Image 1: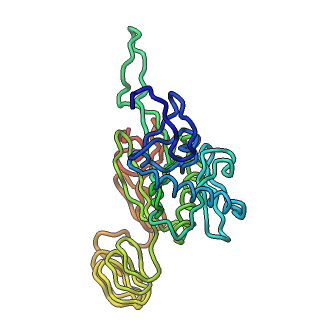
Image 2 (image 1 turned 180 degrees about the vertical axis):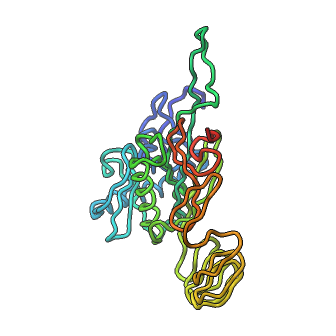
Amino acid sequence: MGLFDKKYCDICGEKIGLLGNRKVEDGNVCSKCAGKLSPFFTGRKKSTIEDIKQQLAYREQNRQNLNSFSPNRIYGSRTKIYIDDAQRKFVVSRKSDYRSENADLIDFSQVANARYEVEEHRSEVYRKDSEGKSVSYNPPRYDYSYEITVYLTVNSPYFSDIEFELTDHRPDNRYTDEFRRYEQEANEIVSALTGGGFGQQNMGFQQQGMGMGYAAQGFPQQGYPQQGFPQQGYPQQGFPQQQGYPQQGFPQQQGYPQQGFPQQQGYPQQGFPQQQGYPQQGFPQQGNFQQQGNFQQQGNFAQPMQWTCPNCGAVNSGNFCEGCGSPKQ
């Protein structure tokens, strides 16, 4: 057959227009039939005609199943996720009407992984010098924006990865109500699809290009030891245990003496002020005392002096701004 010979769709049999052919591994599919495939499907060119027919049968059944889908929660703006908690199902749709798109109906049990990432974007702000040239501030100043993207991995014969940006408007600060609202929505999405608890995701830091991304992946499970989360009574490094087993790094609930922490029973211990008022080197005593250096007194303890960054407005206690990295002035 020549390059410009007429081609017919191996699915519906209709003649394919000049620009309407969609090649598959062993045949041709018209653009109309290809448009009925899942929007998350990316393997058309490696699929056979039989593969396409099976997916189109699944898509037709999916359209029927959407009639009983009744979401009680909706998140997102440009791309929305609709969640039906009663049926434990959800759809992700880029259109305003998920039924007209025939959005894939996915069961919670199909979710293999759900997480979100916060990516920080920054661009430098310049000033004009005496000659009208754009020059950097000293120290440099930046404009920031924050993007929250949800990533889902699902078990489906036709697709596996779904991702969408939750922030239709990217906040310029991580400490605003707008950013907190977006992050709460991301938490709720991950929680709903994985069965975890709010506010318990495994937060980490991930460098992404010029920005800093914060990754949240999964949730702790009921009773299984997991790094980074306190478990139900299992000894684990880094967290106090609920049952009072001695553990390095935390005071125990039962009052056993332990190096590095004050005891509940008032035993003198090196490194901490005692509850019974025994004088101890290195700590302020009850009553009046003089404090020197970059500290202010609050009660009977020395607290770091806080300062506000003139560049980004973040409140800090160290020598460098936690928001933009500027040194303390």
